[in-house]
Image (cartoon, rainbow over all chains, first blue to last red):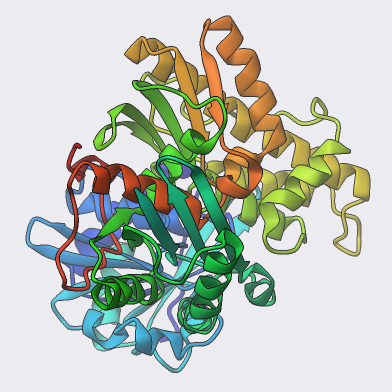
Length: 154
Length: 342
């Protein structure tokens, strides 16, 4: 895993467009962790992914609901935001295991807050500040993630 | 009709008794905000456990305050959604159990219907129809209200709720939880003209809103003014808070104005936690005067979650002959525009 996967995204539009590319690369399966501080654009990127599957409506921040489910064209997408979670054990009460079946795509913001209760991510995406734009880098952690990572570079 | 109302949808346990003839007879509240403050947000499982701990003592207290024997009500109302599932279950199961024990009818109430009817508890209530801005940590919606249960969504936030944006901006500025009131406090000392943040989505037609981009703007502005130790001086912090608040408030005012013009209604009500924001009220007062309309809101303690609004909303529906079945039903997600009219 020595290869470095990285891209510069100058604005919101390019972030959303890259989200659509992620949608394509995953085919609607797998677990993706989204890392980055408040205001980095994790929800914006998630919106790009979910819209990438053909979702027309809004993509609300799941901060207050912890998870927002979507069903688009037969694909199930779960958008998590664990920002408010104080103890990973809370996830057990949410029935977390039911979400991570192979039929769905799970996008997880603030996965650190759920450490120990979450499955291994196929892909870990990190968003960082680069001037007023963003730098996106990603690391595959499974064979499925490796395929996704390469597709995202092409 | 005398109704006991129970609210446990999030981090406040509220119990109240409303009488359609005599008005509000009792209203008690326990807020978990302090408990959750150390975590910087609500903790769902902790919230449920705390509701369990507080609800029965609060029930005793509200009957005592009202000078009534326990159970001396005609019916019960409890919040059945939307909200945190575990928290909702506490209020709904308690409400149903008491209804069964006292042999009284009971009804599950929509939390946001409670909020948008809360100004009805005031001395000069609005009359139907009106436009409602529901604005809190979890919701930002503009609703056309033709009557109880007759709600049409005019617009909503497509990403972060306004209150959530306040909380997150606070976090970026290093302020405590809940951040909204603290941002407002700092904004009072700030220069509202030093920074100008964008007003998201006001250049597009329609009444949808977006507040997520303001976080990025707050972050960039803060980072541009950090010293070598990463600190921001107090005045700059206040100026950023003021610019942020101004952007949110202005955006809400522009969208509310559109909603009044779109519906042709002359009454605007604001409800939910953010409706207690002083700057928002000032700005909306200015706007409604120009629109020859009127602004209504609830007293501060009824802007945030409370039992009184649930007792009131439930009472209206119960008096119309509606009630819920014996099973305990909670709906964490429950669109407001799917409610039954009276």
